[in-house]
Image 1 (tube, rainbow, N blue to C red):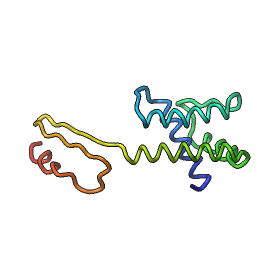
Image 2 (image 1 turned 90 degrees about the horizontal axis):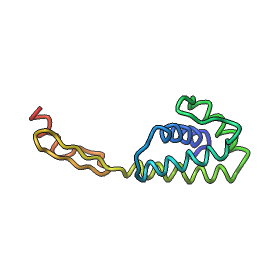
Image 3 (image 1 turned 135 degrees about the vertical axis):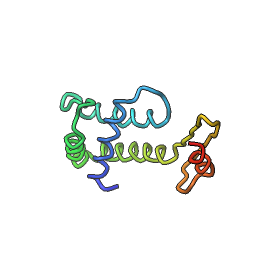
Length: 119
């Protein structure tokens, strides 16, 4: 993954992870990215919900260019997060009792027509 894209993704994940309180694999992956960034920037940069992603991205980019180990660790964690995110599932239940469960579907889900019909 290109370094500036890696830095942008890591910054977005870290800020997203700050706002999550529930468990799960995606939250764990986000917390791992956030933990790596907090450890690396301890005393240099405060990572908070109010942080600007562009500022965090710039710091990550600079540090990843200087520190190959940090770059590799960050790449591994961001890739893991993206893999989990792409495999996440979606389920929906309606008042009419129609339930839909989708796992990484890029097409139309059978049952969507029913939901639209009963609305």
